[in-house]
Image 1: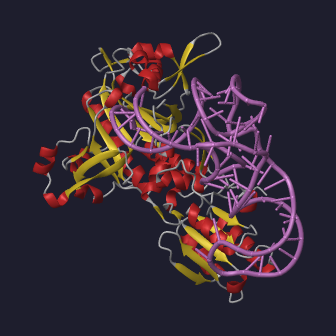
Image 2: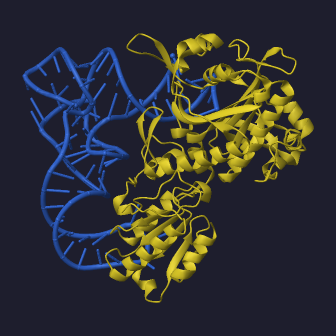
Image 3: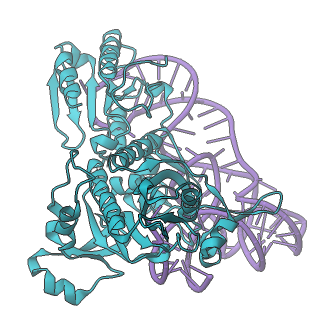
Length: 458
RNA sequence: CGGGGCGUGGCGCAGCCUGGUAGCGCAUCUGCUUUGGGAGCAGAGGGUCGUGUGUUCGAAUCACACCGCCCCGACCA
């Protein structure tokens, strides 16, 4: 019963067994004791992930779909901003890290491994060294710049204390991009492109992200912003001007080759800092009292400019217009893809469960058959399922024999944006019910009207 | 890495103090009745009590060691 149907745009999430009776959706009725924060609890209860070891998770079907949706949005915005996707391995050679001097500097967070030949390897916590090595092997001239290479790959950082589920795991999926430019001015333009791409991608996921000046940490460099999503359970204290919450998001038609500085400046002119770099005196001097926001936030991305920190020791040089070789100016740009799943839930849930923003929802529609086995109800559901799926909607069809109450509770828990409820009682009047998960609004209408309403929304 | 706590059927827990051969709720399976916001009755299956060593006639229970996990703090996408 694998369906082969025309798809709109997305190819990564394939259409196949979406009948709940044939799916794998292990829901938990009770909350596991180990989960303390709401996103972790909901991820376990809704069957998104399973913990396999401290800070290490298996992604179950529903969670994996969300992860893929997020990854795809990140990919689209990176490509739009002119970055080029590659895929680097998880394991790296220790020698590469000795070139930059970080093999000894990185400490116990880096998982070090020996293969059967006693060769020293490591499970990559980040990829500056490797991408610099790739770049220097092929690029010789400034004419090939600017260049931005990115990949989305599993990282491992042996955190002392993993916690909060996927928000602070040891193994995590990260998109990391690396820009290469001939001089500082060009590097700044690359930085700006990523800054704008980040504003767009987080907004597309239904998040309000605020770029804040931040410390550069072990990555190095002297210019950095963290993209913060406000949440009470956030790990960092943050301080900013309230107007940053409602700034317009650059449109899809943004020309990434144009001067983006005005967009950046409009934001960086307003005070925004994480607690690490916070200056209370400046905060009070620059921000009127009624505009001061001090809150907690989750870091979902960070952008760095670090110049020649890696290119100089690793000899990644290109010839400039004058024929002289200079080390390239670099920046790196990370997005915590797996962390975002938790961050989105922190930002969007209620007492009944998750409330997925439509663009990242594992399925767009949950179809609830209130009386599986009843010929008329089954037929109506089959019809709806086929029509919605043909129109490009991802539909999860609950065709199980559970009782209605249990089905409603499950649908609310997994948080699909729309629920289509079909039962014999309504069908007698030719009506089915549509429920919006976010608002809770329910509406009765004909099957045709429901199909129209749900598919018009793209 | 410092401090605290917890490991008992799939999940949540009781039993441990005071040693006597494992129990409750939910879930699962079967049957019947039910079916518009987490149904009822009847029956059934499922546990090396985290691991090891010791004490004892006897250990889930006492002692020691180890492993795993969680929470607070210091550190990080």
